Length: 213
Ligand code: GRF
Image (cartoon, rainbow, N blue to C red; front, side, top):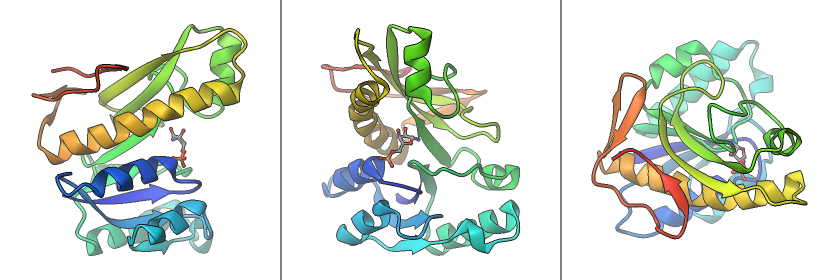
């Protein structure tokens, strides 16, 4: 399955997927990486991996929909069937979400539906939650919503600051995002209503990762 990855920044989740794709038995390949920010570090990482890296700067477009249409053109030209948001810091239009409905996924560094939006790690610490985590989900138009594919949980330790918690969660992001891509490419993921079933899949046993079988 050919996939497109949309990025804006450092691209560590993109890298985790590129690394997974380097295994010939992995059922997906990254056909194009698209950044809305020129010079994003993720672009260099993509080039390093030999993947087409394209900048489509949102600043060059007069409105959100025309930017999104240009992104769709690029994804289609690369022959992609799945669009993977990996630290893509731009809201997508309803039209884009509909064009790619059930073929567009995101990772968010919380156990959704808790802690949508930005600054989640600091907000989790301020709220005194005992567990944080991350979620891979299909994207619906409303921010950080959509059918959940897989989540991983991590403890919040006494004395954690936002950076320490972010690092612990990020390690799990790098585990579950490639897993979700693999399961989708293997045809294991079915959306029913607004929830997901994953059939016949396995997750690493040394982590608190959960999905519905
Ligand atoms: C990650 O924490 C991801 O969950 C969020 O944005 C961050 C992107 O980090 N959506 P990276 O660019 O993948 O390193």
